[in-house]
Length: 247
Image (cartoon, rainbow, N blue to C red; front, side):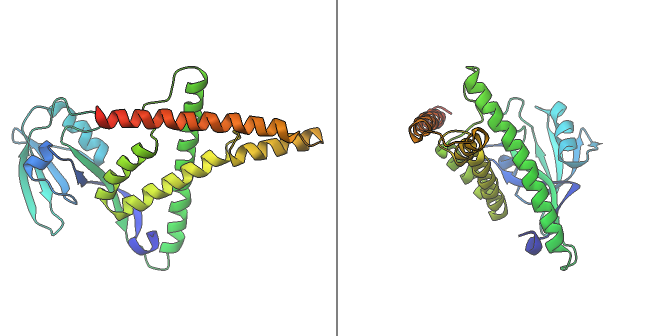
């Protein structure tokens, strides 16, 4: 994918990748793929660099009218007036847009496959660590009675997120699918009963003690693990349904 599209490179640009419905951005006519090049408040330019810098500068301007200079995809420049929301809905920002400071850089064609592999491995490793930590927190929360974290989603929640990602574009969709694949792979190799990792764990025990465990014992453990996983999935699914009914 990176060989064909280019290598994602972090820049100082602020690019709109999604505009939410019923938001100040939609009302002001902001379009996806627009680049925010300038912010003006009371005839004074607000200096920023990158997405994090832009968000930081917008924060104290909530509820106040500002001007955004936008560079459209075709090269046309446009100035719009907008009022960032004081109290945006949960999960949304003051303007109601998703932003990115990543740009697909087109290196020489012979370099792209090698650079693409490096980027792919680096991103996979980073997501792998993030997912492993999240799964650890999930299990710890269950064992300590804190319950399932709010950001954990089941099939219904994943479907809802995938619809939003699909709107951003097919590149984001492919990346989301890759993250799901990494998630499932890590989950499957965890040393938990009923998973492949649980089976490997039992094989390791048999190797250490030098004899085979009774099939009945291993079967009971895997059965308990399976019921636990099914119960956890049902719990998360019910919570996802409740979120749909009462967002």
